[in-house]
Length: 87
Image 1 (cartoon, rainbow, N blue to C red):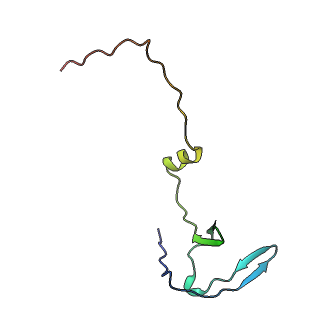
Image 2: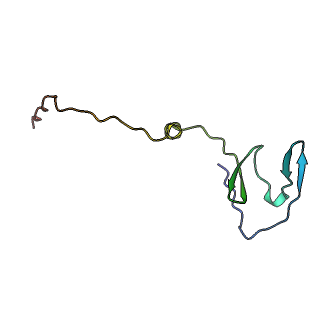
Image 3: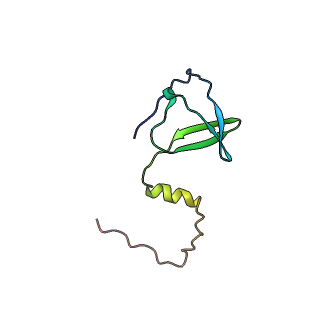
C-alpha cells in the first residue's frame, strides 16, 4: 500500500471551480494523490481528501458492516452435566 505522508505545515491556496453541477478543487502538483479515486470525509467545516485504498474486504470488515449482534440468552438448565475428563 502506498502511504502518503504530508507535512501538516505545508499550505497552499487552491482554486475551486464548477465541473457541471459539482464543485471541484484544483490540487497543486506537490499534493498530488495516487490513483483515480479519493475518499472524501466531512469533519466539521473541514473536508478530508484521501487516496482510495483498493483492498479486498476481510471477514472482519464484512462482520463490522452488520453492526453489533445481540445473542439470545440460552437456558441450559435442562442439560445433563458434563462428564469428568479421564486424565
